[in-house]
Image 1: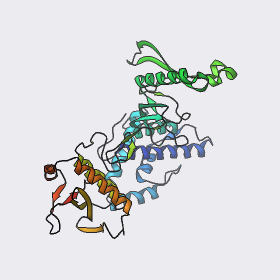
Image 2: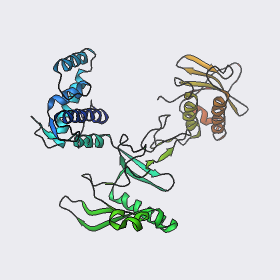
Image 3: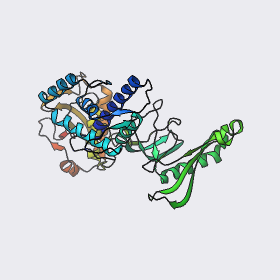
Image 4: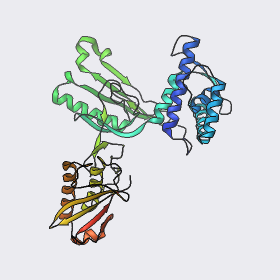
Length: 367
């Protein structure tokens, strides 16, 4: 797969490729009446996509020049030029054109496939609590009734096969599709395993026979197997952040923590959790001042930069439940820490106060 240049993300390139495919489809409809027909694609299609023009079968030079000049004025021209170059290079590499002057007859389905691969993310998927979680590649935009279409490695396909067969043993095969990996143990000329996946829908066997009840799944060009795509109710597996929220396996939490970094010190956990709790109602919150009186933590003020945005009493922004949840989190963290920990904890700073000797400012992590 062609790599994008540093100033063009894979998502941007994939979106532009979708526009190219739609232009190809419009051309096919105009020329043949068949939206799936192969049509001629040239560099002007990439110019249209990079300029962000509406999908059109023809190339409108005046519209393109206007869009390109506007891009120069708004400062996005270098980025659009990079996108244009990357579009040309990607299509030249993936569709076997001459990179210098490529053009040819292609179906838009091929371009959609390239865009899908560029959008794909490494994640984990599951079907409720029944199957999974399994590692997979997923195109977040390729959805069937809101469900995913994952592609698995051979090792993950084996794990999936084991789980389906255990389900069949436990609940009866007549209500469960089973997956089986057929592996010859050798490799083909490209060094990939000589293996395929067989899916059996036992519930249809009696009425429709073996041929209609089985599906052979061969590996794609990346050696992955699409199992249950556009048929099974695959969804993302989730992980739970220390702030209490859940996120898709491949994504950061709303509080911006990732699975790879989860703090363990109680005071650091509290800093992230309180920030996430308060930012649900005040996204601009950057810090809070708290009072620890006889072991009870209480938020006095919340700030956005140097400006106070609420107090614990006026209720204009925060409700009682939100402040109470934040106070409880702080109190639990303090009860789990030593007094000396407060002075050394990142983001915690003692604040002189005439009314209390235990007032601290907590600076929230930057989003």
